[in-house]
Image (cartoon, rainbow, N blue to C red; front, side, top):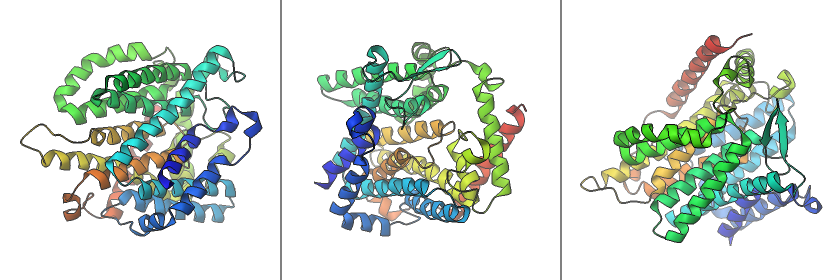
Length: 423
């Protein structure tokens, strides 16, 4: 009963009935569903929270640390309790997924269910764009029409596009490996509709995320040989999907790309002024008047060095852990073509693509961010096999790695801002 309810929570996370049914607007449907799911699985939930370790579940360590930092920084800076409660929901969902998705079959169901749920956003948006059945969800930005999720309260055009990239990657990988012709064509159809919805969103970040995901998948699946073929096909894909706005590189100098890099520079300044606990969760907008448009720098500015290191580390360990799973599975069948669940390729692909989108979005406290992170941890449990109990998934000191990754990110971002920002 708890696992189906978890799937319902994922559906409600992306498709909130109140956005397109006015009679349900304002009702805490998702909150109620996740609390009931927690009540039905409290034993498994607490076990996963207590079983967190630096060696086996480094992502979980980072997520737990972020809960502490968000709370401390929020209390110290007098931040809105809504931000803290929103992150608490994300934390609960993360460990609910770990508790209930305990087999490859359930992981596959959860991944596909996530893709279908996100597809629902795109489908409603496409229908609304062409029929106006929900009152219209398009906004005019500098003379360019950009569609966004129905309701617009949860996901703007950039948020919607980033999530649709995740759905596209899942549909394409499922279509590639499905033995059912019906399922294969259904996934291809869903991917095409999702790509069209991405075009309507007109988001540059989504194109970067899509390219990142496709390159990651091709490399993991076929190695450098696949990358050579991918390099030939990539321009064709970009020509078919990208709009003029997506490929407008001049925005880095004079457009929204430049303004966002200026926000990055401001975030670095706020971080250096408040390196311990930051300025408080959700406070960047109050300081700057605009969002940071970079979840990683938002973490450093609002939560300080430790909070920023934990968030950057969570994404780093998620990618590293899931990539390590691919290596383990390959080594178990080194004499022949690896024969294991294709999700081992898909999970790091999703994480890499979503990480790329976080460079231009504000999803530090977003529940969907921690859903993506939870999938990588579950994949480690499901596919690493007995070898994972004999050697750590992430070797070396967790604290040292967090420090190195955080300092490296700050240094690269600083150089980027010094070179590209024009005041």
